[in-house]
Length: 249
Picture 1 (tube, helix red, strand yellow):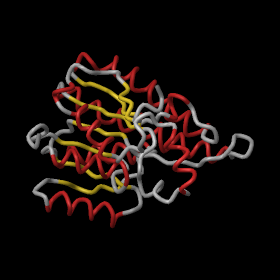
Picture 2 (cartoon, rainbow, N blue to C red):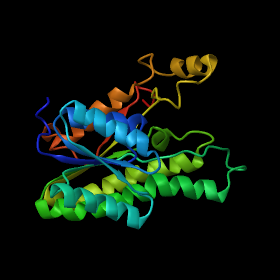
Picture 3 (cartoon, rainbow, N blue to C red):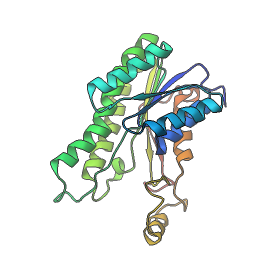
Picture 4 (spheres, one colour):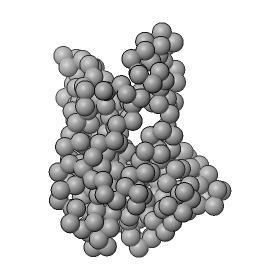
């Protein structure tokens, strides 16, 4: 497994913590050099780079606000300038600003759409140029079951994640002739720093709705993402891999 992504260059957006961090570690463990994108938390990004390098891998931390065209272009340019190419792009950067629609401000809607959906489009647009020239590429977009079944109090988040699914399918059709695949991973309830402190009664109630009887782990999502980045998934494109323990069945 460690050789699956040998000599591959991967960019992971929003990689300083949570699911993005787990994906970066998994890709690195399989041999990829990883560009660790972050927006604000330089210490966390540099700690991750040190961890990857300490395990014998290659990594580079790059600050960029990928919800802006300048930031997305600069991130991909840095990867190509440093390593000569980009093979894998994982669009993971995301945020939430939850509220019922009657209380949600326009600025909260725009912030989530920009961070989640706009960044995916911008980074994909920048990366596709380099991938198509090399006639090889793997783009994996992190969406959510909220984009499939919806979630009350998350009209902005659900809309952004549903948009990512549509973007994935449309882009897969555009670039398939150049051996570039585009897929999405849709996590369900995943144990992260943000969800670890949920009240026990709420966590128990959510757990009861999951057929497999447990929340997912960061590693569950990371391994699914890494699979789509390997040549084992070379005949899969335009697909949404749902990693949710059966929740959205």
